[in-house]
Amino acid sequence: MYHKSLLAVAITLAATQTGIAQASVAEALEDGKMLADFRLRYETNDTDGGTKAAEAITLRSRLGYESGVYNGFKVLIENEMVHAFQDEYAALTPGFDPVADPTGNEINRAQISYAKDDFAAVVGRQRIILDNARFVGNVGWRQNEQTYDAVKLDYKTGDLSLTYAYLDQVNGILFQEVDVTDHLLNVSYKVSDAVKLTGFGYFLKNDDTDAKDDTIGASINGKASSLIYSATYASQSTDNNDATYMALELGTAISAAKVFVGHEILGSDDGAYGFQTSLATKHAFNGWADKFLSTPASGLTDTYLKAVGMFKGYKLLGMYHEFGADDGGADLGSELDLLVAKKVGKTTSVGIKSAMYSKGDTGADTDKLWIWAETKF
Image 1 (cartoon, rainbow, N blue to C red):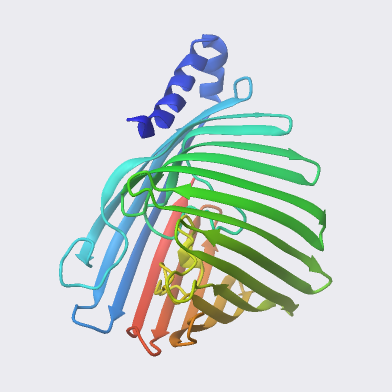
Image 2 (image 1 turned 30 degrees about the vertical axis):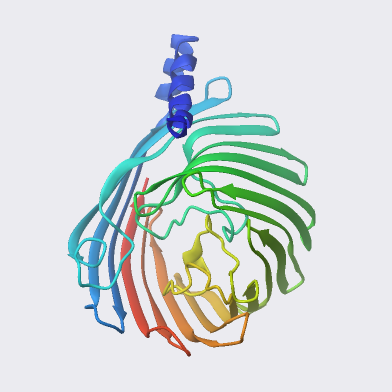
């Protein structure tokens, strides 16, 4: 099928390039490097309801190789495997609360890239993160990250950056493959440290269901003196509905910490449809308990306070959310998120974090905990 072709193109191009000049290619291969990334994680999910509290111990292993450069070209291939040592969670054992880390094995990335002067291109299975991943990301928190079979083109000159990507397949965090015809366009211009302007258009189509959504938006962000700010507006259209998105965030440095207050609205079309961000790294937004991975038809408002800083080599982060419905104003609960993380040497990090969600007019109280160690080289 055609959706396999981008991965095949990457491998074919790599083979063709190898045939051009064996000696030069051999040097590029010798200049390459092995890739290795291991993350061991303990995760719990205790959601009020009829199922048992979940406990999962999983290991994510990535092993790969990236060549050196030959005439601007590089080749990268990486395998990813998720193994469970404790499987008391819904993805593997019925009757338990969910943890979104099924076991499996797949090619995580297989790409050929090219870079020269202001231009760069990547063809094949790849990681794509645009801006802060609010609309397009890799969902890197889950053990199996989200990747794309795609062609991505980048052009950067001075303070102007342009990215276009054509997506043929989305490789999701549950080891699912979704055939798509997606076009992503992102353009940014850095006026100064105080002002960066970004415009974007993301035109998505699910080939299996024919569902479409087109999102067009713009953002401005920057830092002026001790003030850190960002603002984003976007409109979204499907075959039957329209919705808007707005986000404002202000922050400032206080001693060794930074404090932010923000308000985000994923709008509703009169209670019939909520603004969706299907390619986003959703775990990073609207609470770590992941209660709003799909925006309710009534939409979602998220008013939050965040503080982040360093203390004796430890990263500390706390975040409090108040959730509501954009249409009708229903109370959708609140959440407190806490994190402590630390780097150990140059290649290893450890951490612990928790999410405590309290239901509003609807929903279920949920407590989650994560403890992890990761090393990469």
